Image (cartoon, rainbow, N blue to C red; front, side):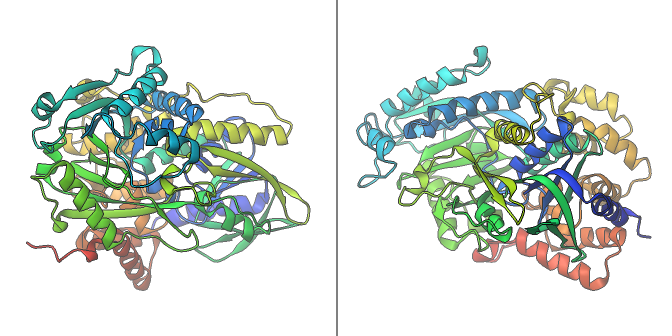
Length: 568
């Protein structure tokens, strides 16, 4: 029997339609839009967040899963951005320990002095001059010394260290024996970006009924009667009046502004792709650390252990935000070759690739600046739209690491427009799902105390997925819950995700509410089983279930069909 979960979403939309009023409408439910929504909600502002897709399904879902200070931004002279980034990285380590963990990062280095002359030219011109020159040990040493000055945070972040070839190979035996040095420093890993975004969203919604959020609702226009919104599930249109619009649609900012009748030319994003490899030998070779290095073409790339898989990325190619992006065969070959350069005795077989993803970075328009040298900083553009000159703020740029600072900046700008003042700050506000989160050493005792009736493996899945909110989830599930995908997912969890996490479509579950796709566990049988269960809960007919399966498999298998058929 279908529960009234679909009516729960219907109730949210009906409430917005009946009110037909919000002080601020935030368009774009990526991390910066969600962060802005939370900031405004905590001030008591009547705020509505809408996204034409799922929350955190665009650029926010296509990151390299890192929270980092951006050591390479030093070469661009972006000292302000580096300082802010390391401050926000350190803050997230404290405020979101359930999602953000320290990440030991090692740079293989093949020369001593290379790049010492070309780096200043890159900083001054933002262009690559001649053939890419590898950054040598001296240049990296200078950069890491400066990085340490920004990163210390009272001594909580260890200083970098250099090792010669012999000690480097003792620590990483599979590393290319031609390496001359390694440099190791700390940044942070973001294990589940989409779920971190959901945590921020939940805290915003928890501020009170004045804060509302709708996914699969598109902003399609503005006129004297308000902002025209379209529910993409029912195709109904309705209007909501507002005092201010905030556009946080990332790479699609110009497209959104054009749809609203206020054309702009702010953006110039680039495409980045990644592959996820299920290879125990490669995983072991990383020794639990990210390998972060400069490839032969000058591109900064990474090999990164995550969820018992290895993430390899990323590319930096010009992209058209009006067109969908997907990984190409050339990009896959590029990743295979860069792994072979660092770990020459561990060939990446294409059948080991279990997942790929691509996204467009929300970069500012950069004309002839090389993609890899485009600023990762952000700015806020103030314009107006519609017949009544409704004020609008557009975010240009922004990245995962600095989302809280960016959101704070946007919210303060919005509050100034509204002649309001800030009443609450998020600089030391622990995310709700992280309150009381146990250290790795205390995790077993915590689970025994808080989830005594749940099996150990299942309890760990719930703790990782929901943080300390897992106790609420376990109460919701009760004792009669039925497994759906082993310990990874249950029927009751699907109900919970519909009721409390805005699940509307199958891909929401497979790609963003769970790690099934990322870990290569979402094969056709698993996707079909989830579709059947979700379809029963949401009242889907057979055609809808089939369409959901086809769409989700296309997303989970994107790029994999470029590789030879998997051998068994």
